[in-house]
Length: 389
Image (cartoon, rainbow, N blue to C red; front, side, top):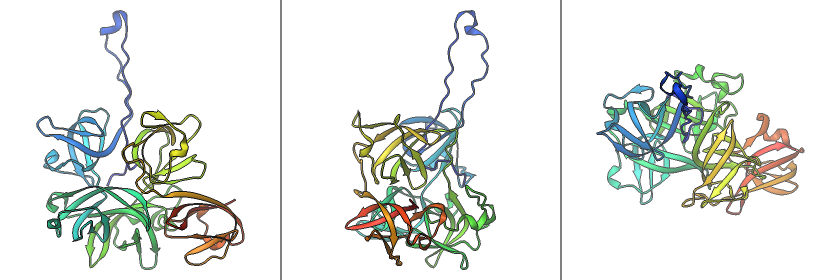
């Protein structure tokens, strides 16, 4: 699948053409240089008569439709409202629409308020008649009591033959086992990547390559495709989403999944990192507010340049989808167990979502002064990031 550098909702960056004056107004003008256009979001509306779709409130003319880098012969006829898509174009005309779901697979179980697909249990109410059907799920990452989960945006029934009989799953990588060539996505689905054809082609942000990119990669958001076999996802392709906003002006919607204590750096959708400075404007209900309103779980739209947020708009209807609060502790790290440690005697829990700076191990920090940032879940203080102070 063609990956975008910011894999959430990215807006267009258009360069306008200024008008000339005098006798030169009718003269041929040099071509206007435009930046590549990337848009990602859910489809609001489809107009098959005019071959047009509306995404994030803007209409676009559809040139072709693809899924997993392969063109779909039926094109716009396969698109449905609330599908997550990526648009690529130099203008708003003749865009290429790439379908970008979070999961594709068979619904194996439905309860009153949940369903299971590809081994993942999702909180979403569905018609029980969809059990056993192929579906395409679009979602955003969200902090839950059990770690990083999914906020489901849409579940759409599909014909598997239209999409190549292809299972797909993305999420946070955990529990990597190099010997068995397995890892988990989240806490539930076991992925076997022994037959991933592209394993040697995986590249990291540093000089590592291949399976080394997966080592110590619990913080990575990954995408796999392949087939579910006996409850195990047998991957034939593994990709790592990375964030490279250098030189880009972007517009992204999503959920804050991590933010530091002084509100100067946050992570959107578990993989897109942004900084906040004194020039960043934050808006809520048509009024500018202080950055203190930003928190884990906030649903926002951010406009950024080179990774620095220029404007942030808090969603007034669903400004926080988790309700969790964050904390910060500094002091000597001690009393390490499999599930917790202490900082100056204060107990802090750990789970699969913990990130340790410089790829250190927790045991390496025993007895050292550290700074811990995390989230309060119920009465538990759960570490999200640790660094030497």
